[in-house]
Image 1 (tube, rainbow, N blue to C red):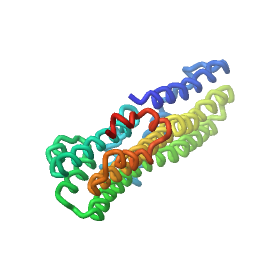
Image 2: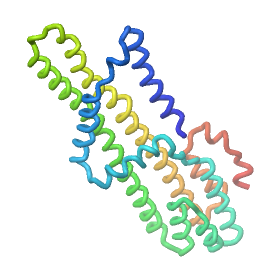
Image 3: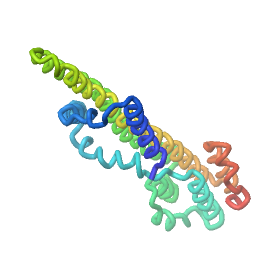
Image 4: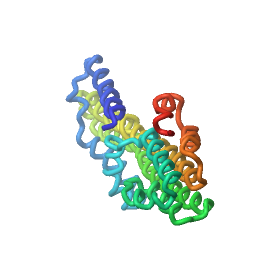
Length: 260
């Protein structure tokens, strides 16, 4: 589980509720079913107009990745590819064919299989970079959906507020009810702004960040695969991949053990 996502959302929503309580607001006054239906239903409806139905149906799985998606470990990937380099240098590059079949990572499996098959370097790079670009586009569509919902939600809230004010103006014969009715009308705006800034936009940003991290690891993997194909020694393979890593990660890896 991504603790940053969970803690961040709990902290954000908790801050809103805490502020309301400190102001002396009764939490029951913040509950408005009709406003909730309008904001959530309207937001999803408007978003569906702009995106394919297939993408909207798969939104639940995409959202799950923001909470439970496993981050790719660059350090472990470096060690695995360096081990492949060591094996290829000792037994020949064809010895990696059996290893490729056991791999769970699709890009790494494809890359290793391509170099085992003797595919030219330019073709290997082109195929793998196309895979990464395709992945980026898929991730970008998911991010765009959440960003769109973050844009529509406040507008739906304003629509709900205007509808509430229209209803209030139609009942001016009872001035005693104007205060509660105005307050209820603005609940829709509160919902729209809150869902946009404390749910939709943060999740979109999280997915964007995860995608960027994954792309960086994949670019590192491509360099490692091509380095193996070029016949570089394991230490050079590792050095090329380490160039993509932060200083902290470099210090955490044991160069002597992984590149002997």
